[in-house]
Image: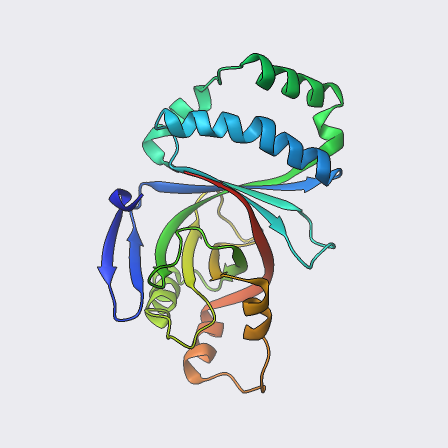
Length: 244
C-alpha cells in the first residue's frame, strides 16, 4: 500500500500524505442480529471483497465493531479503500459464486438480510494525513473516530491547523497513530459532518488510560481550533477483520 502514498519521515513517527486519488468509503450498519451478520461478513462479504482485492479493484477492506456504546446508531463500520479511477469497475463488478459461497448467501438472504441488518449510512472520504509510530501495523486494533463539522467555511485554515497541530506523536502518547479525512460525498449546512480524525490504539486499556489523569484547561492552540470546527462526538471501535 505504500506505493499509493508519499512518505515523509519524522523523528518519532512516519507522517504520510495521502494521494488525493484514494477514496475511503465507510458503510455504517446497524445489525439487529449481530451473530448472524458477523457470519455473513465472514462467509460471504469478505470473500466478495477478497475477489475485488485480487482483481486490483480495491486496495483494502476493513470491518469495525462499536465498543462500549450500545446506544450508537450503528454497530459496524465497513471501510472500502480504493483508487477513484476504479469506481466504475467496482460498480460493475460481479463476484464469482462457488457452490459454498452461493449456498451461504442464498441461505442468509432467504432469512431476509434486511431483518438481520440495516444500512444507516454510506459516506466517502478523502485521506489528508496519516501518522504511525515505528513498528505499528498498518491497521491497529482500536480506532477512535472523531466526528467533526467545519465552521464558517474555513476549509484551508482548519485543515492546515489540524495537520500542523499533529505532526508527530511523542513516546509518551498512548496513541499509536492518527489519521485525518475530508468528507467528499456531500456538502451543505445540513450534513452531519465534514471531516473525521482517527486516533489509533493498540488496546482498549490504552484508550481508557488516555482519558484518565488530572483535568486541565485547553491551551491557546486548541482554543483556536475550536473557532474553526466543532467536535460533534466520537466512537470507539475494535477491528473485526482487515483484508489487503
